[in-house]
Image (cartoon, rainbow, N blue to C red; front, side, top):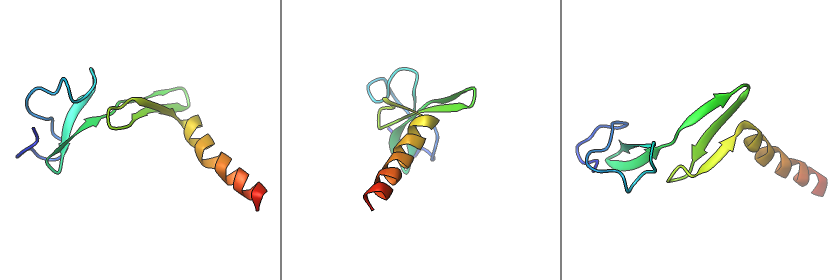
Length: 77
């Protein structure tokens, strides 16, 4: 429940069924959301995305997702 709770403060009540274990539930505009974890290993950054923090992304993934379509488009043109 996020009624009356400030932005980016922890949700009140039982949040076990809303966010996965180890992920905090926080509020924004009186709506709950899962605050996904992130970490760094060497030069690579890793972070979880999605409404339930179930998608793991890395710096390399982001580069491939943005660069490969641009390269393919340039070949088509």
